[in-house]
Image (cartoon, helix red, strand yellow):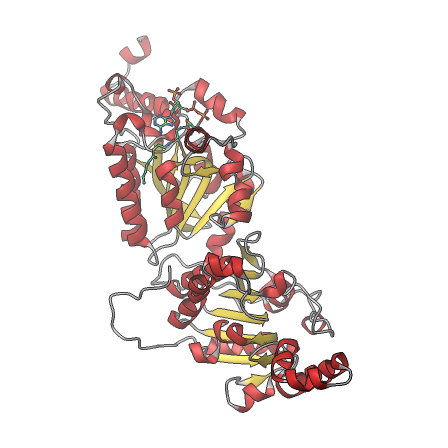
Length: 521
Ligand code: HXC
């Protein structure tokens, strides 16, 4: 008190500001912070500091209070209404961010909490900078009723408006329950952390009441569930720090908005241990890891894989060629022979659309026997899901380059960015086999009578399979029609890709005027 008495009026005002800020920095108080720490979680403020460039964070709406009037809320103070918003820098580039503070009313979303989030979303869109949302919340604030639901609606609307204009990143660092899940689902990349992220529409209590089933939060929507099974998450980390490193790395590959290109990096050769000519086994039935092909052409063999543990029969992610960001899409022969099925079609379709929206050239490596057959896939809608790949490739107007490594059969040949979907460049390795279907299946159908009539049907089948393979399972029939621009040696691939990207840098395509297409959602 004495100290204040001797202070100037200005200094007293500054002191008051500091005291007010300090109270807010304390969020939901010591007990709630201790609980947060006991769960292995950082506080919202610590997360922002750990993710952003040092000293770059500027906070807004710090003094906002909640607007609840019922259930005793009018007498409660919720510092910042449970969410921190602001702008800052990551790797020297500007971003907008919000982080929900679970220590304040469980990070639940009330009217003012939502108003803060929508304010920063509007800034991000107007400034054309990426938006990062750190989610740690019990969902709609139950005491605020329809006002909380209104808040979610306003957020979803803005997620949709910003889609394809600025990159939107969601980080799930705690519960993301009820309505909260749909904002991440509308964004471009979802990051989860083992044992910390919990994402579900209805929690264990509701599942028990409605279905009588007993499940844990982890089983319902833990980080592994969404990385491996549901496909809702794109990046999985073991700790919050690892997760922040992944976000920073992703941001180096993507542009800040759809009006910009990704920042170029100095060109670097691939690492010598990736020998492109040694990757494909000489036996055409043997699998290999297609990521080695990507690493053998990418600068410094650096490849940032997206949805690494989901639908592993297709590989998608970012790398660079000659310093420029490339979106790689590749069939993975070591998983289900690299077929397209419902999940891999969703994964590829969405990634292609991201690349197209954000000016990132797409390189496709093809080696696959077609779409996955069977009752299960048909019932799950492989027709509808598979169509997403056709739609995404056809719609994309960024430079599109395909290299057929080995198998390109049937629907797969068409779907994986063929000339007929308007690939700009089509290359094939000498090992390519381009045909309506695999030699085994084809011979069984078209030589059925000869095989059955033969003295030794099995021997005859082998002869006919070899005959078919010799005639059609090569790149030269397609090359003779101009469907393939060039048959190239594996060692030439990086050089040819680099040139194809260089000559496509001014690509301009006229498409018919329309409000928007209707992709097979
Ligand atoms: C108000 C909430 C809240 C909520 C949590 N809290 N969720 N307050 N509304 N939705 C408060 C708690 O009362 C508690 O306050 C503090 O946050 C911490 O919560 P705990 O339960 O103690 O924490 P924990 O044990 O870690 O459990 C976290 C939780 C659980 C799993 C998230 O709180 C929970 O199940 N919450 C409800 C989740 C849910 O069903 N949300 C859906 C809402 S409806 P005190 O004061 O005690 O510290 C919805 C529909 C929108 O979202 C649809 C839009 C399309």
